[in-house]
Amino acid sequence: MQEKISTLQYIKRYLKRCITGPWSLICGLSVTLKYFFNPKRIVTEQYPENRKTLKMHDRYRGRLEMIEDADGNNHCTACGMCERACPNASINVLATKNIAGKKVLGRYVYHFASCTQCGLCVEACPFGAIRMSPAFEVATTDPNDLEMILNKKEGQG
Image (tube, rainbow, N blue to C red; front, side, top):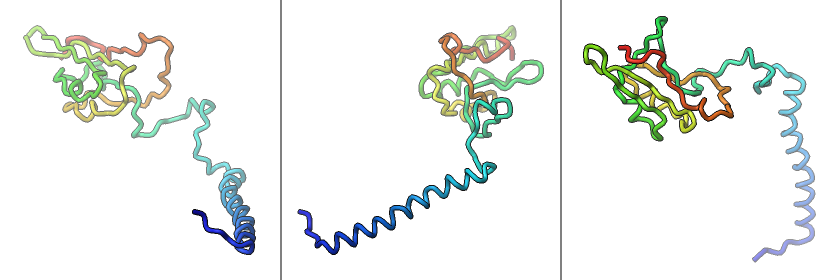
C-alpha cells in the first residue's frame, strides 16, 4: 500500500527535483564540455583514420602465431600441450618423424573460426613457441582464410 502524502510534501518533493535535476544534467555535461574544449585529452581511437599509426596494447590477444627465428625455424616440439589446453579444439598439432626417427612438428593447424582468443594455449606451451599476435583486422568473407597452417617448414626439428 502506498502512503498518502500531503499537498505540502508533494510540492516540496517537486521543487527539490526541479533543483537537483538540472544540477545532475550540468554535472553530466561537464565531462562532455571538458573534452570539447580540450580535445587532446580524448582517449578514443579515431579508427580507421589512424590505421597506419594505431598500435594495439601489449596485452591484446589477436589470432595465434608461431614465433620463428631468422631462418624460419620455430621452437615447437609437437608436444601437444597447446592442443590439450584449447577448450574448443581450435588447434591440431600433427606430428611426424624425421630421418633420425625423432618426433617433430609436421603441421600446426589453427582454426581461427572456432578460436575464442582465450590464450590458454600460449600459457600451456612449455617452449614459448606460440603467441597471440597484435593483428586486429582479421575479418574475411572467405571461410578458407580461417583455417591456417602456422608453421612454414614441415618436418623440421
